Image 1 (tube, rainbow, N blue to C red):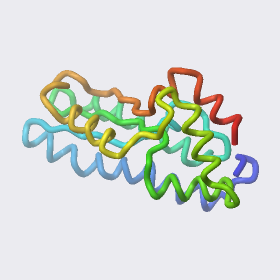
Image 2: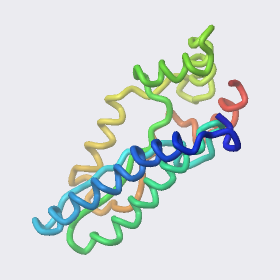
Image 3: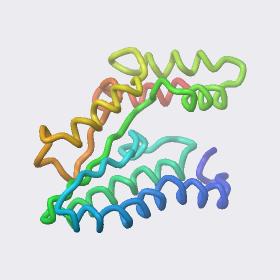
Length: 170
C-alpha cells in the first residue's frame, strides 16, 4: 500500500516485529556474549533495507533500521570480541514469497514470480540454504574480522539494475 494510504497501526506492528524485535534480541544477547568474551550475531535484514520498496513503507523502514542497529551494535561490542553482521536476502523461494505473489496478483501469482525472477541476473529466486550458507560463513572463523557489515544474497539483482526493472514489472 502506498505510504500516504498506509495504516498507522499496521506500520507500528511491522516495526515492532521487524525492528524492535531485532533490537530486543541484541539487547538481551550482547551482554551474555560480552561476558563470555566473544560471539557472533547475524541479523536478518533484506534488500528492502538497501533500497526503497514501493508499497512497503513499514517493512522498508524496519529493514533499513536493522542495518543501522547492526552497524551500531557492532561498534559497541567489537572490542569485546563480539561480531554483529546481517544478511540481506532478495526474493527467496519460500511459502511467504508465494503468499506475497498471490497478494500482488491473485489472478496470476506465477506471473509475479516470473517477472521478479526475470529481473535477477541468475534468473531465479534465492534458495533458503543459500542464505543459511552465508550465515554459516559469517559465524565462522573465515569471517573473523568482519563486523558491522552485511552480505547481499539476491542473485545479483541489486548490482545489476534489476531492482528497478523488477519494480516496473509489477
